[in-house]
Length: 320
Ligand code: AHR
Image 1 (cartoon, rainbow, N blue to C red):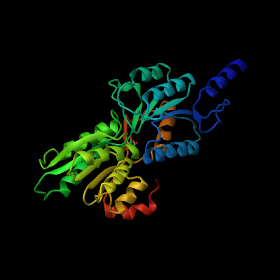
Image 2: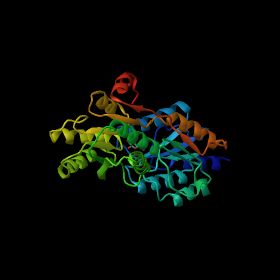
Image 3: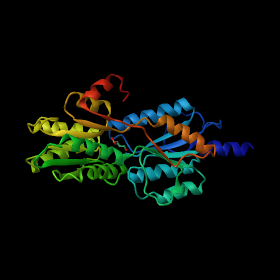
Image 4: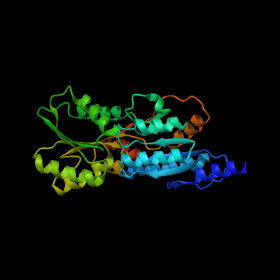
């Protein structure tokens, strides 16, 4: 008995993750959740990490948190560590959509349930994970495109659009591009003249926007897959002597505080919200899958959109 107890304690205490709460490694009954985060690339991601850590503490769950620094290989390594440590549940936000089947199968063979949070994977075998909690990224792109169609309905000439894509191969980049493209497809005036990844970061958004501005004398609209790249692009647009929000209309996704401030200030024109506050629902799901309860295969986050006027109203009470 004593030997078995020591073995359990030793297994759950090993590994190199940043453990949010050291309790639970000493053999108590706390549920242990291994969480592999994408990184810290954006304001959205920081808010998401805070939400997960706070919700775990509140729910009495021991969180083993790992930051993958936007690298799939780091996420795979973290998931393997969690399997080795025999955590109760694994959750992760996959940096890209493809290439997860092998490690997910390893988790399944070890009997550890997996929850996808924020981003999806493209695995054909849906039994490799229990559920996916997150946004409908295609819808976010479509809402952005529909706003633009309405906004430019009286335009007689071409409307030149540049697009800042998120991380190449990630679900939000693939899906937002798709949704936006579909929404504007029926309007021949609306043309995407350049589209490139800024990796969801401010620095990336600024660098790519500088290139866009150099290569294209007439840019009417920027569609940025997140606020941070849009905020980086603002600097490039201003430095090029153009007025963001007027000379170049800016549409983004997320609605983090800095983005909402830019919208309220008239520098952005429209934001499709993507909520990072997934922590409480994630903890609830972790408890349910650990208890062997059935959970829905897909849980969609509730979201809205913001204009310059509604951003002004929402800003004072914005949590992130
Ligand atoms: O997966 C969600 C996306 O990832 C957010 O829109 C973006 O800001 C983040 O980096």
